[in-house]
Image 1 (tube, helix red, strand yellow):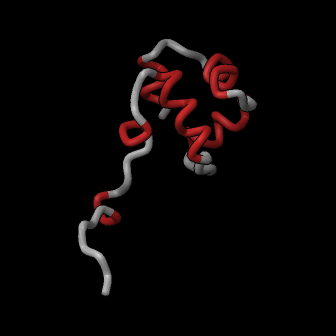
Image 2 (tube, rainbow, N blue to C red; image 1 turned 90 degrees about the vertical axis):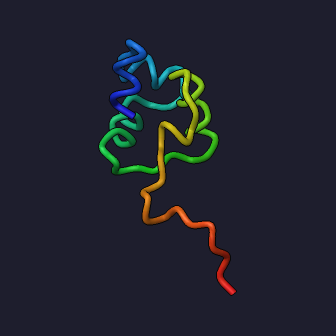
Length: 69
């Protein structure tokens, strides 16, 4: 997420304001210490002009189309 924020020209404080969270929450998300809620992920993606899927991609190992029986 840090790279998307930098490309958007936003500081952590500005993104925090847009996401309606503390700057420390943004720091934690960028470090990978905190997984944002769906609503926060949506607000952050909108603020950064991208999608949740682009901002928080799943590791390839977690992508599957198989449905367990």
